[in-house]
Image: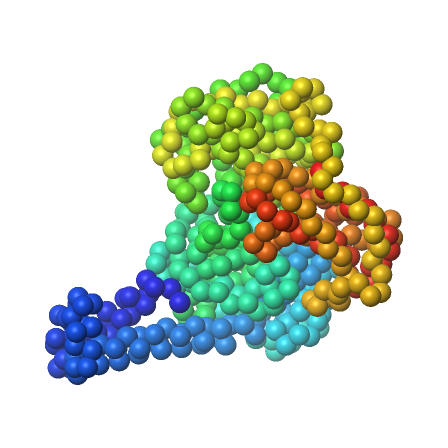
Length: 491
């Protein structure tokens, strides 16, 4: 339950009680006074008002969920999973383009557990991460109404429904609209959004769609969901749907840029090129998670290439955030370069354009910095070939542990590591499609991967570890048919 709307509701209810004759309730605000008179009619009226406010909030939650959840679907492809919103009784589903853009058959799971095949009808363009599916042979399906554009307000309640991590269908979370970014047409919310929620609805208290959940942002050594989630604003939806109806929307996937950073002009950085000097200052782009300044850069890399990215400054504490060719966070670092400088050494998982943020560790820090990007093979300080932390040859076979969500087999291994340590985890098999997951010392998911690339179905994770302690690697098959030999390496 969110404390802010509860506070307003409680205040309103107390005002109603006061108008009914218990005037002292509105005046008796100090908690010690309420405690001293806990047996008085006035205190009992206040307590009754608070309980009534809590009940109203709870009933709104229940009503929104019961009204909207039947029209929320889970979406599974050969590569990814996500969520979607049924917007027409004949089976039109609104979701994110990145959920369905990697090809293959699209399977939709309805709220009652029944499954159906869906076809991708159209994609957004100009970086708009939206797509529309059509469920085959659908009729009389429940739908979610779309809110009127321009009606979203900061502070209003927000509700998210989706299938986090592809395992918990119709999970319901509650928060508020924390911020509206008009430049990117994004809604920021503290309602919990996790991988697998992508494409699902963000709703208002009427159960209307106000956004399409699309991204979370994590920052710092702890990682994980920290209440910074983003949804594509409903303001984008009617024009996109009209383009779909008119046949003007693209029917093939468009190039997607990271939704958080899609509108900035990234400066090109050359591998093994000259050192670049920049400056963080007022007027620069601001990172929503902590209001720190950042500059955006990009470089072109090849799969398997080992690179070192360094950011140094004598005027502030540098911070680096690297995103892969798909726009997902690949690594981040604060002080690995020594003297509070930042340094990322990484093996690039695929060929493409990589984006990174030259950032500061705290909000408000400004000053001049230097950037260098070079090949790790040419650097005497490179840690590669990396120390082998763990190597295991194993077999997935009958009798192994079974993942309840899909019946797939899995084995587990552990290793000790330190916060800030960068590791590469490879899972290879010629017998089945490997799936890899890493859990931290707190039991939270650190990362997961299915395929290294479209042409390589082995799994690879490259992560900067968020904490010191015992990590758990789960060796899994993509589906319940996966069996056979595998090789696991942690470096």
